[in-house]
Image (cartoon, rainbow, N blue to C red; front, top):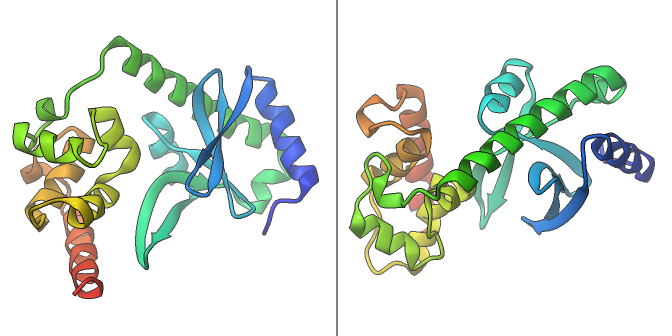
Length: 204
């Protein structure tokens, strides 16, 4: 259900309780930031909470639907989660979810301010991959996490000099999760392989 103007103002009121609210253009919609931490995304009349760090597992356990953003016919799962209509009707629960998103986003922001980690220092990454990603505007590990493995892969295929492989796609996904490709969960690998095969078919 599309958000009414009344609901959007209601959302702003709740977010303003936490700190200074700002908007930033993102993915054809705009992000909502509280104290410079990205809490959610308004896109095509829907609101999605950002699921970083512990917020991600909490939202998935709560049954929130993950945003699937389609770019050039290719579906990309984003780290944003849509609130159900029932949640909008329960202000206490709604505020609780918003606070979880906010505190996780603030923690992630503080981690970024402590150090900006280089891509080559992530698992599965090296100088060659770091240089290739740098040429498409992915300069730091935080950029890689924000954009996601699939979107990075698509950019590399569109603008890179070399054809990226399924091994690289899995390596990027594992790097974002902070683990070696070999220990990336089997379900995630299978989903990436299926996406890769579908993507290759659509770009032939």
